[in-house]
Length: 147
Image 1 (cartoon, helix red, strand yellow):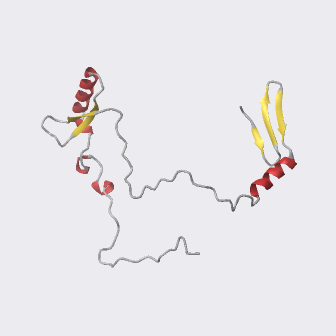
Image 2 (cartoon, one colour):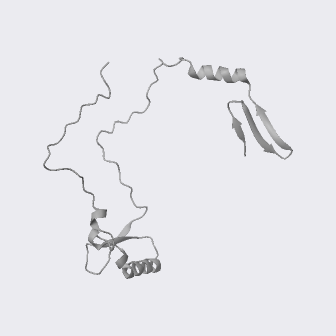
Image 3 (tube, one colour):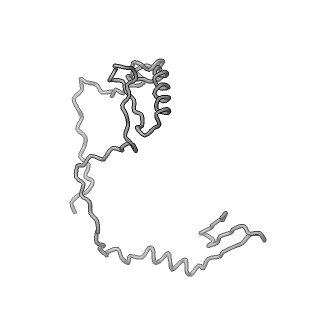
């Protein structure tokens, strides 16, 4: 529905097949709603916490493949450079995919030295820190001062 709402004017306009329809709001009802929202009622009310999960230092789970995967070496006998292919893929499709990936192995970069045309200085991150200077201790910031 294509409608234009103006909260300032308590008005909503929308197209109909006979022209433009309007819905007007009630200023007293709007004022009462506003007062209810900003009132201090319920501020001091303590709500119970139903489910508390204390996780501590738990490592987040890494996403897992939807299906089992097969480790396929890029070249026969080279176990370092491998790619993964879904095990539920049909034999014909699996063979086509493996052949395609092996035929286009020059596209893959296994290290930063193998990326042609891009300087390793661009790809490698280095901090601009002077090793001769001692570390600077930052001022302690109190996020939750004791009350």
